[in-house]
Image (tube, rainbow, N blue to C red; front, top):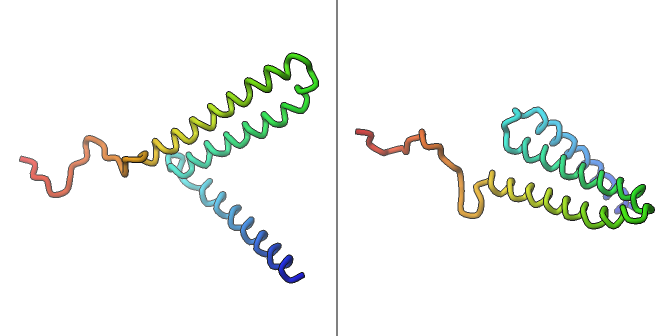
Amino acid sequence: MEIIRDLLIFIAVMFALCIVLLVVISKMPDDNPLKRLLTALSYRIGATLAAGAGAIPIEPIPGLDVFYDIGVPIALIWYWFTFFRDALRSSGGAYGGPRRSSNQTQIGVDDR
């Protein structure tokens, strides 16, 4: 019985930490990459939930359910693909690292 109590306490603490993390990230400036990533992730999760909720009234309609069963997964796959593509692109990709703009100078380079 103690293990169940400990697990419930752990779940409650982790839930509170997630709420604190969401509040801290939401207070960040709009151009912060972490906030932009969390916003894009929220949109994708919302679209996926909406697609699932839309399936309930559409499935009994003959003909429309076939288009829904084919079109929505393709659209969701593309939507999630763009999320991961943009997330990798903004993090520097596989070969990247931090990107420098062309107007930044290197330290130790003599400008004559």
